[in-house]
Length: 256
Image 1: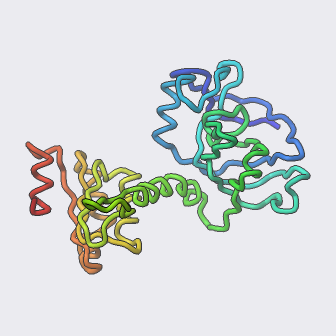
Image 2: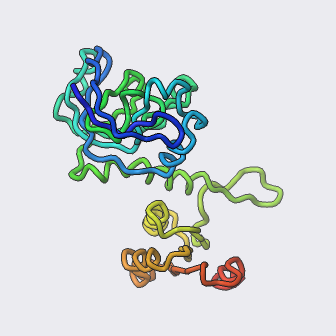
Image 3: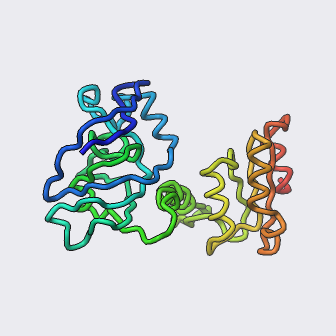
């Protein structure tokens, strides 16, 4: 069948191509993509081409479909996976495959697998790793935003604190601590903010810093400081672009 996709042919060489998808094998699945959110690493991939660690060397001859934050509908299922997946099911996926130590990932490494397309083929390794997931929600865009949200959550859980003479790290953010989200009024920052405000371990102060007042105003509208205060969190939206010394200005908010 024919597909139309944004494909990478080389560094700074993206093209909207129409091409023929091969017939799926018994261990593959054909899907229709409904939603794919744009990641900053997709931009990085586009400008680097084969210099990106996930892009295959022969991308000029076998262009890679861009996009990895996708959701959509399953169209056809190979014989090997028909016990678990059915045509008509909605899907999303975990794109960081790490298959057998490789860096392969949709949106960088595959000729027929990526999110910026009408249709694509999900290869065998995705199902082998359990990375194809049935989606039962209502809005496809929410599923395609799950991967960037997981990055924000991962950052919180990867943070740690140390104590002098104690060699066990205290993982995660501090309960009732003070948290700054820098450049925080964009999409990823807002994801981090909603997680900070609503998770189990919460700070007592959150400062969202950005240099774009329009973004900050929108963030303040979406997350009213009064609602945060009702939950015991002191929330600030700060334009550091207007500060002569941003570091000193932020420290002043926290009392040093």
